[in-house]
Amino acid sequence: MKSAYKYELAAAAGVSDRTFRRWLSAHRRELLNLGVKTTDKLLPPRAVEWICREYGIDYAEVA
Image 1: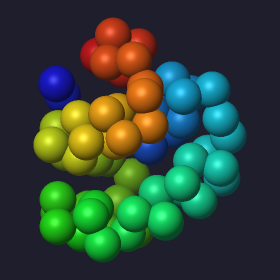
Image 2: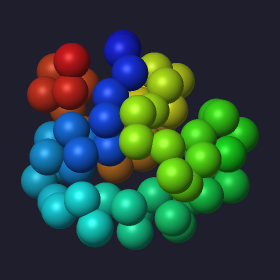
Image 3: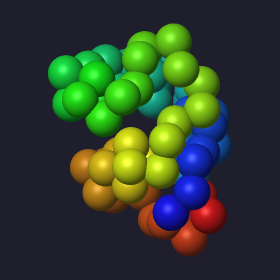
């Protein structure tokens, strides 16, 4: 798993950037524990892995 931009994950999930940000806002506390701030554009590998698991995003589309 590598770092990914929010817009890349949104595209892999098939949703707009705005919708994806709304999804993430519902899990703000979990993301803060993973070291992600709401203003971050590039997400660290641990956060990408968690988001992909949480929302059922195919890892291959992101990698």
